[in-house]
Image 1 (cartoon, chains in turn green, purple):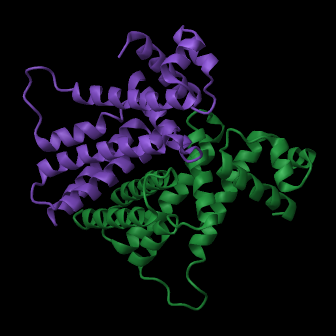
Image 2 (image 1 turned 120 degrees about the horizontal axis):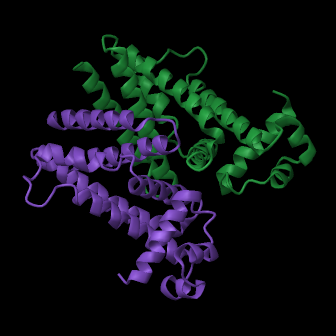
Length: 194
Length: 194
């Protein structure tokens, strides 16, 4: 991606995480990114184009920090540890993860009122669910695929629910992480019984 | 509660569910409720007062439709059935439940950016978690209280996560209900092992 485009999307993610998606104005985004509004319209066509590309951008960024955890040359994680790591990485109180999670939750919440992002959100969620289902399958290879898919849908929705409580100040991050670990335990125990 | 106040809060819940909390203007609320802005300021002081009272109003309404399910004189539900019913009632595609869930999710989402509602949300969530923990304890009386509380926190956050996906068009309601039943199964199985 061209550096200018990345610069605009980074600014959009920052603004959405700071004030929400519904207050996002192209003029303000231009000021935050240090570019002209014309350049933004040239690259993204309209406001919906900006939001769709920002959703993709924060998704890619989440994948990068998820995949980047295992240092080069280190032993690969055991399947169970990799599953937990993948889910727990989103529950960390660092500026970039807080920003990413806030922007994701806000784009999800805005889709309740605005249909423009719904297809992109559904696609991104499906990819995420399939990734978690594959990790669950590595831990419980004999579990039937529909049971793995259902467990993955629940674990990802659980993560979104806990993340929202954390970001809205109702849940400490360490407690959110404990609850998420407990959810993984419960789902894996249920899959062993299938 | 005075009928006029109820009328204003009903209008506020409707407007928040229709367009979100962040676009809510007192003038618009007055028009929707058919009252003067002066009356709204008299009863609720300011915008934060309106939002806090609306949160309480939609919570009370959720309790009413939850409690109202068992017809007068009918056999009381077995503890397991009561637990499932309580959680599944929030996942129903009826106008009032959709409106209530949309308004709740929107107030939660707005609290990420605005601290004014955080304490009220935390208190309402705690009451809800304690209610679900008590129902879990009736099903699994030998489970230790901290395990019941953690399972209740997860099940309520799970419900919020699934509800958000349903309301943002990414999950069919019947599938959301199946996933919620599966979560109850998994948590109860894990509690039996404690």
